[in-house]
Length: 291
Image 1 (cartoon, rainbow, N blue to C red):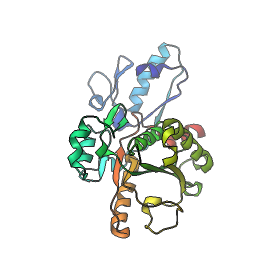
Image 2: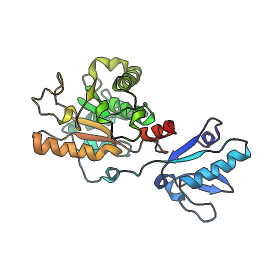
Image 3: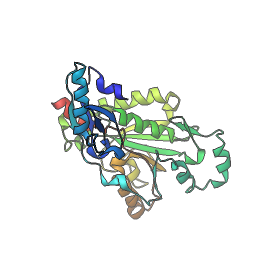
Image 4: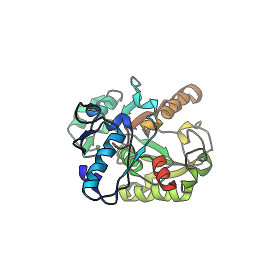
């Protein structure tokens, strides 16, 4: 989408050197991808090289230069392998991995045929054996940027369409004081309203099976004992947690807590890869607003 780089209203490009890998050829940005991180005669990879090339092209067209906005390093959770409870949803064989660990193996042929009971992610049919009866997802949901919308869309798409339920946990204000630029985070009520507005437009037919609640501890409702009243009216019967790979380490820690301390089964962790090529995050957005 090279035309985006030439938008007159663009002010910065946000990314990380480990994923940018741009070619800079003849003072113009001409490609992307890790394989182009360093190519003789065509510039070096990384965000700075790409932004320099973009700015050279913008200068020719009479446009103001852009700022390179670096994001934090990727977390270790992005490299998890070998955990049967973790499925990266963008992997080509993601749904086969889920199928192989379900008890409904006798329905596989029906699922592959695209019959009833499936859901959709990005136009791809999700087989019924890859859907869950009680799905949870949580976060700060500051600003409802692309990553938030993607996460909630994946969560909705992972719920059994007829009887499945979904819980959305939104972090309380008092748990966010340690975050960078915390003073730029909207209050809980505003963040919950943004979530509910998006979900209401995305899946209006599921509104009676979706709950949005404030969370005040590290694990939220999926980390509560079965008899707990910490979240009144909620039962810890979850079977899947949708999360981004930035929070995957916390999800795996929650699963160990469920097994070792609570004595209940682990959740299937449905993990989305980094939310977009330029690595936009709430922290990066708050940094922009602060400057």
